[in-house]
Image (cartoon, one colour):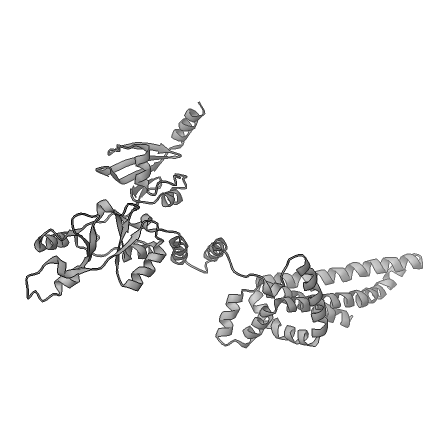
Length: 435
């Protein structure tokens, strides 16, 4: 019986080792190894030859399971036999019943104590288990290497015939969606906070953005002109309170550079000044330029402003370094932005005030709607596609929402109030649609 107990313990060891090394996070082990944890370095050795060590676990499980069956069944049958004899049955029937009960008992002990319980522990405590079991597993692999090499080589050969690679060569890289799901689960369990997951999601979205989506549109660009006097340009700077301004020759389609007000205010003023003296180069990019590419270009050329041009070469908009940074960290406001209205204002649980420049994908994400038109980028553009002469108060119903224009400047939709329909309104709308 002692040998049977030892074999069950050994089975449990190999089972718990196998599940733990498959479940453990490699990145966490690499971190611990980098901190100097010797056991973590042993685990890394196991993970770097995962195929071989899984074979070692399987060999251990198989050998111990055979030993349990070989020794355990006769041992338990011998214990049970005297109890069954008391029922005055034939010797053959007594033997059969004894063997059957012994088989059931040894199977129960093997499955529960040797397989299921260790598996549960390994899955829940993978890191602690691998740190504990890696050194003895390495020792077992060293002793049994010839057998493991033969068995593993045979298995890899068969797997290779049907197109599978060894476990140690498998691709461990995660897709973007898998990373998002991992981050979501970590946030759900409290490992990361709201701010951290927002930053990560913004990073993923950042990679898909292009210049056209985040630019300040041409109509809203505050521009200096070389044909205006120096005093007129200074007055405009004082009124608008920006740090940098694009400067154009005749109109906004001919932007030739940018002006930084620091250069003007730090000048010694010893001579008559003209705005031309303070012009610096500016970057020009097309509308479809990825903002990650633009960010790299800005860093390389040490320029904090870029002009976005359309397919005809005209000015479509303007992007600053701050605009790009806000795509990652969210809105940045300084002491001069007190009159700036946020892109999204929540009025109540069913009502929002949205900026017309808000991107349609962001509107869909906020409202769980499906306003989709590949030719349009912004909420204001979508409103214009529904009514090409929008006025203050123009109302559009789409899905479960009323979209009401609250501010228009020329033909530009500045703000739209979005309100969810009441249940009776939804029912009336559904009835009208069916009719």
